[in-house]
Image (cartoon, rainbow, N blue to C red; front, side, top):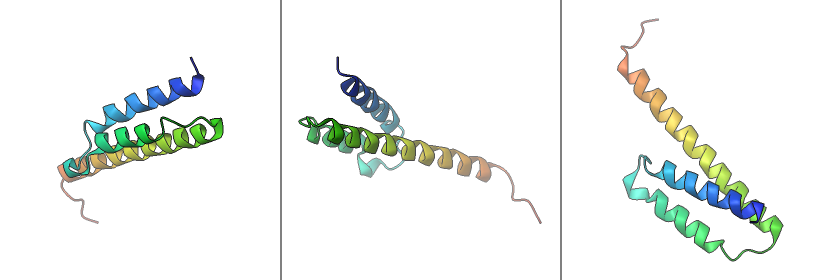
Length: 84
């Protein structure tokens, strides 16, 4: 099996897993990711495929950062504000 195909499938699964907990229900994260992958399924040039995979990895990293920020904000609200 093509290594780029394996990376794309793994990335797709990771994004679908991350989309379960996406905070904005009206955004339809999983639907958008599915359409993005379906749009790029006919790519044949290895450079274009690599660009698409890098875009997906960027989206994954930004989504993980969003989740970390959400957790941080929740923890910060859990404690009383400190007086300077």
